[in-house]
Length: 444
Image (cartoon, rainbow, N blue to C red; front, side, top):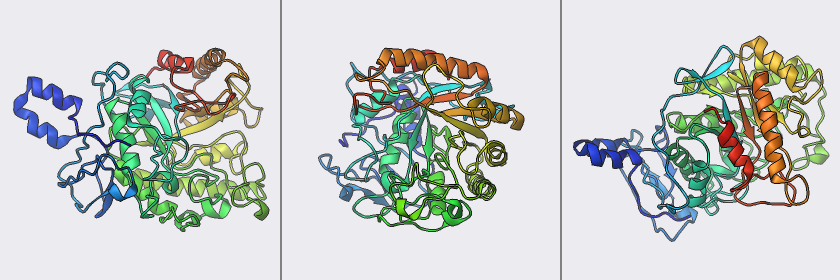
């Protein structure tokens, strides 16, 4: 990645023009990630932390260029800007109103008004090869700018913030926040909000450990470091990442786990072939383990960051520990603020599923609990070998509007990619009509 020369924030440029006397104060405030709680942190080559800034060789992107800063109480969290993108391609929006997304009466609220978002998943955007191991393709700084600039302000973007591939340096095998800092800084610049997903059920792109009943029942405090890139337990990593980004203006809400289910993976399928082969020996015990996990982990997130919501990340279609009414039992955790459902049903079926585990049931359960519910993933395959991109955009528009009418508080489409990966996929790439549909329907 190019490191480039620092550039001031948009706020600083306006201040120079109108209130030059306040320039030094504005520059001290800066932009970017939240307050830091670590005596030693690794920052990206273009990140300023504390009172010390070290600019590295802009031609190098290897992990050896990471800056180590030892300032437990930083006097500044200024993040120098990214290389100027092409002005003909990227337009920086005007400053948008701030505020933190909250929940009230089963709905989301922003700046005192009802808030509903139509956004996207972009799981791969923290990939930065040579610094982290990455999960999915890498985006250049310009591509990252273009991605956030194409979305309406105050959209939501959900992405993997996994320890194993996004937050650990491939050379030092220690936590390196640089790639995540880059994502938070870019999202902040374009007035977008993020849902960082702390881990995933399968362990893919992370520790490689399938999260089973014992893991949810307390095993999340243990270290699983078979691949050498997860030096912290889930519990310790959660505390580190929440403390790192809890004050970022770009933070939308936290997701502790994607598609949690307290199922068992038979030994012959571990560690890489569990999905689709898992079993559920004891649904009641699984539900209790999931509830314990969300009570404990969600409670810890709220203790560290009382201002931001916690979203469950549950798939919602009857997974182990959240079958039928157990979805309500788990979702009733006081540490869960927002429920979720993932929709990969047939096109033009906006309310998919059966009478036990379908979306209609989840909407009713959310209403009974007085909690908002979002479609955390919604995908339809399209491409040259299947449905056309324009037809997919039309079908998704129909589904999203019907789901809004049914009571959802937001939808995140799966999945934005910088380029198409196959001839028939869920990929949503630059120029895809689905991006235009997001801009049209977003109420954020």
